[in-house]
Every structure is written in C-alpha cells, then in structure tokens.
Image (cartoon, rainbow, N blue to C red; front, side):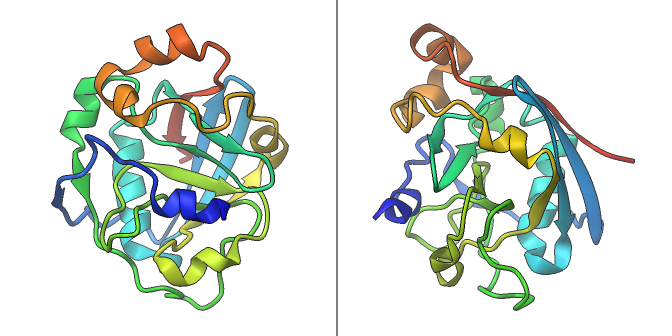
Length: 198
C-alpha cells in the first residue's frame, strides 16, 4: 500500500542523534511562498508538541528555503523537506522523539493536515514533511501525528507538480542538493521561502 512507502521512506544522510527542539508558541502560522503560489499552515502545538516545536525551529532557521516537493502522489500526499543545500542537511542531521499517537484525540491525517515523515523505526522524524491530500487516518496509530493544517491555499497544494511521482533519489538530494534536481527533474515545484506570520 502507498502509505507503507512513507513508513519506509529513505532519510539517507538525515538521520543522526535525537534532539529536543526548543519550545515554540502554542499556536502560530507559517506562510509558504512557492513556485505555484502561496499557502498558509496553522500550527497547534497541543496536537503534536515535539513536532510543532521542531517545525518552528526549522522555519525560523530558514531550512525550507528553496526546497523541492520531491515526492507527490495524487490522492495521497505531497512531501518535501530535504534542503537544496547539502551543508544545511549536514547541519540538521538530527531526529526527534515521536509524539504519542492521538495526543489531542481531535486531529487525524485528513486532507490538509501537515505531518512529519518518518521510517518504520521509532523516533525517526527529522526534516521531511508531507501534506495529506485526502483521508489518510490509517497513519494515525503509527507515529504520524499531524501538528497543523493548511487553512489558506489548499488549491495551491493540490496543484503541485506530480509528474515525477517519487523518482528523485533522496540520497542524491541530500548529498548533491538542488544541482541534482535542477539537472534531472527541472519541473519540480519548490518552496521559495517559509516564514512565521507575525
């Protein structure tokens, strides 16, 4: 099944020591400026405290600037979160602990929710994210805890280019960055920048 692919997604070069993120706000909004237009994510820390804190830390450190949507599967999700700068990938070679499934018991992997990707191993979330295109609630009990939801621009998210499906090599992305993607997958949509909305 397709969701198994997320569970086993390679995080080559992005795995390392487990870290505790700084504590972020209880609620905050992030605007993504992309090659397809803008969308906004509302983050609720209570849904996934560790995930929300880590996401906040990555955004304020500009990790997602110029990152490509490298895995887009219609009806399932759009995934990104490997930096186009290999040095940035080395810097953020960390993993965070899992949040308990159903922390708030009020959120599920449904259309528009944003969640960290991980492998089948515990505590393997790092920098990769995905936005659900539909009802993927089967992921809820396996460590995929949503920490936010797209509240503006879901039409932009749904229009992200899916022509390459999941062909880009995550290992090459990690080690070679955007030079590899621009040469072999030139039509990938990408994030220009992600910023906290005051």
